[in-house]
Length: 172
Image (cartoon, helix red, strand yellow):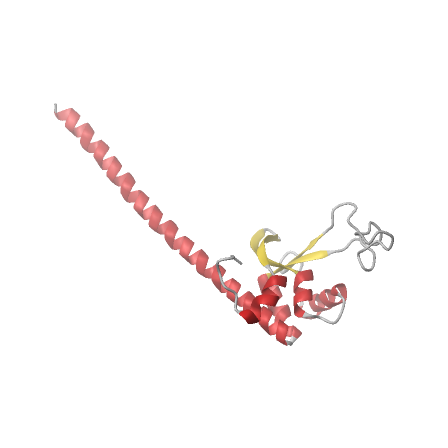
């Protein structure tokens, strides 16, 4: 969200964790939420992979429609805690993590079914973001129509002026 938009106090914590951004799911661009951030924001008691796989199966979410799996870059693997026991830095051992990008609709549904206070806050926040996006798209469409209409009038006047100029030259 923009720094200019004040966030109500009750949403501040969840808004800081659960951030919506533009991303690709399937072949479409839409607002998306990182599953790892949503999981942390909702305060889910189970580990991320168990939670997300269970929810996908239970509610019938589909890859390429409701979410995308983001594969890690080469060498980005973590151990069970993600840190190397020797250095305390990100480990290069273990299995690759599978991050997921969720549609706003999937994130809202997951927030709703979590059935806790943080889930309800996240659901409302995501709904407000979706409504703001729809409103901004409608305003953009109206502005484009207005500019197109104005441009056509300007072009029309320009063509009329050129035609008048040519006619004036033909009369001489």
